[in-house]
Image 1 (cartoon, rainbow, N blue to C red):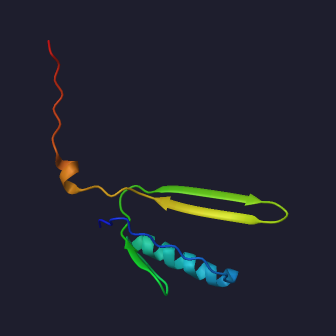
Image 2 (cartoon, rainbow, N blue to C red):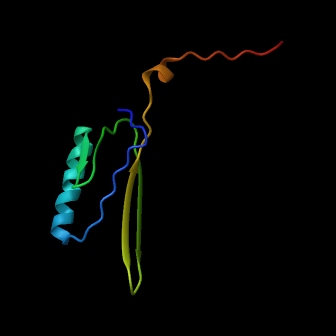
Length: 91
């Protein structure tokens, strides 16, 4: 699915059980190949496929603990996948 500069960002305070439920929904969406995110202001649907890049970062200090989970992938058009390439040399 092609998106032209679509962006979704949500930030709120939640308890850990609610966040765990949201992460389970993300897990189910990844398994099905379709993730839909909606809040009061925005909505976006993503359809991950192929190989996905996973990055997990965690840090802790006396003032702030952080867990970042990022999943990225690139969408490929069928046209670009099926295009032929020819390589020749001038001999």
